Image (cartoon, rainbow, N blue to C red; front, top):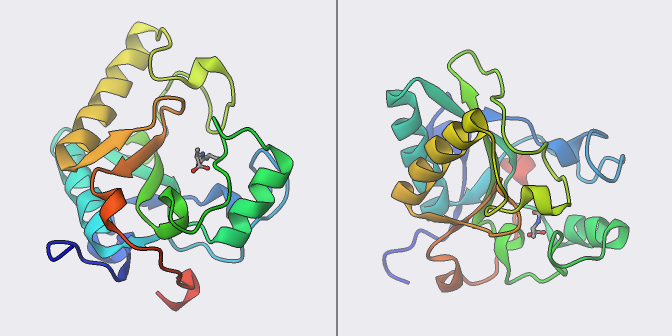
Length: 184
Ligand SMILES: C[C@@H](N)C(=O)N[C@H](C)C(=O)O
């Protein structure tokens, strides 16, 4: 645990070029309801630094990262799970897991102007088409590989059922913690 930085950090404080569009702060998500009251993407500091590394790798290639979700408080997870109680796409509420302890990001790839690039499905498409082993068109494959290589190089691994979900390879070393993103 000594190498981990366990506080929370606003990812845009580390790298203002990271785009943040927290979909659960809006009605533009699979529940069609506003799930939480903040628009700031925070994560555990060690995880946030990894995202900044991925962003730097992408910017070198002319791309940018967009964050659709970051730290997600347990009450928000409860709301999501109530609407879609399928653990293969929405995790059971658990303060010691993934988004709920701030060690996971839902991300996509954008061009240098911030336009989202074509991926295999939209965000939170809870079908097999979102699986990482699902066939992709050539352009989708190009974008997927660019995003995936940067995220893996920075210290994340992708969740097999959701191409957008990246978890810190050290996620299990973090204890549960909660924070109010409005404070960051
Ligand atoms: C709901 C979706 N964006 C997501 O984050 N799924 C994973 C499995 C999770 O709930 O942690």
